[in-house]
Length: 593
Image (cartoon, rainbow, N blue to C red; front, side, top):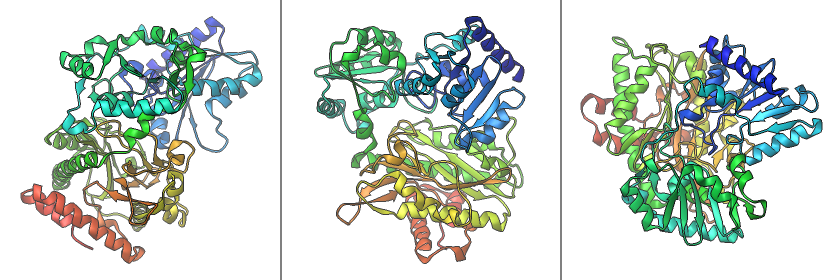
């Protein structure tokens, strides 16, 4: 593998030299700024071998580097080993961003290659501003990496048919959504709106697809006008049933590749989110036609209705049943026939697949035993993952996609003897989790304001974690859904005010490199509190938290009460659906402390 990567990097460097260019920047994105990508657009993964969902590769004529954040430091170190590609730990002191690095390293008058389909218009402008001091130019039309990959078996774009999200689950019909979106478009002074983000298109049209692993979306663009809408999509994806569905709402279709030609002749005032729209498409729209602004569907879909929340609650019951069966089997086999991390991930998916309305996993399961638990986004591979033995800690972060909801849960479990240090760290993480769950806060409160609640107990002991405390979650859509979240910032997760109906993860953690990892995650929904003008959270996830790891004297009476009330809820919702030994296992793990 390393030899392949070396030859690919060398081929790109030779092409740069041939064109008299000095560098190329390859991000982790597709034309829709997606987090998870169709195989066709995994250019950064192909060039360097790093499989994490966030990272940027910079290749100059004599060097190559990968920038990624703290969630992936350990994974990147391992996957880059032997490739000659340097790891730049983004976010650490004295590590420049990719644009600043190139601005510092390249001589004046250099040219940098950037594929305009992969970069948002906003990101392109940021690079241009950084490069302006040294008169560094950007060539965003040359496709060096893509042309090399095309000769090496690059996958085709997916063509599987889309399907309708049944109205019994979708709840809000397409007409209702279009009316709300058109109202917002008008307020912003536009007569049309271009949507480029795949989850927003899927949500707006009550359609789902198979183009992106784990996210039930499909490649397309959508333009919403005053009286009609146009979906730009591969014709092969549109079945007669889907065509009839679209016709009901005056939505016609055109070829996916025709988006640019349509926009180039646009005479309307068209609302475009330059943070999400790729630079290629943005540059095609006549300048006088563009109004930059937010994507209205983003906030509309973030605030789930009461009916949608009830569906999600049902999905949580199914998820809890599946996890109970999987974890029971894991513990039964610890001493006689232990599962590997990869086998346990597969077992969880198998148990979920037995539930009604199952579509697939919502992200690659993170099953990290002992030291692997410290790799925040660790993904066990078949044949190379560890056996889970009866000692130490197991961190399991997984989620399911069901027709009636998206789940995301992390549990850290003692599978055998653990140290006092691990128990104390676990208890601090749990206290932070409870603090977020129990928070009551005024309207207008943002995720940046709440984040400290999760970290306060760790900070007192000189501990911390390098990821956000929570992210928005979709409704049978992307497991990471903007705009809200719980994070110290910067970005929307830190600055978006919480509103009723928002579904968010609550997942503080602690990681000791080379030793163990701890994370506890539930999904919470924001609701109005009994106090006028104040909001609160309510947990929806239904699975026991390991109380054997709690250091009793570190817990307050209120926190103990929270644990017992939570387990009483879990038992009432999940135990009636279980039988035999699995039922007894669940009852035992829901006992009050």
